[in-house]
Image (tube, rainbow, N blue to C red):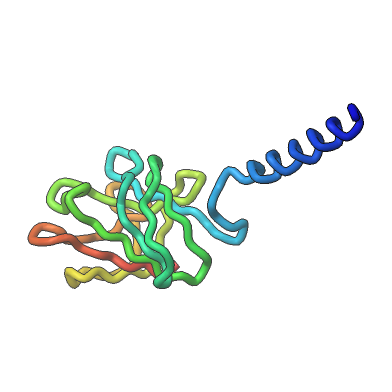
Length: 137
């Protein structure tokens, strides 16, 4: 009887641990960039959607996940203010990423570039209403 109980406990342990093996809801193929402000702080709780898939929010480091080739729309609302905040796109190493094409509903567009000695800067305008900027990643 002890052998069966031990076997049952072993099987249950394997099942429980296999369900907890992943620390992320994201695939290995996904990449991660960060939305950061002029103070190099991640901007959290920004709603984003990549290629019409499920809507997510940037995490505490401003992190957002995408697949290479995705178009990702970030909704820049009251969390940031275009009259006060400068925003940048950085990679996981904390380096600004230049050359990403973007287009915003406000009419601003271009490529992320150097600004104030930092790479990855982009323009947006959410003075009158929220602005959604779509990045071609």
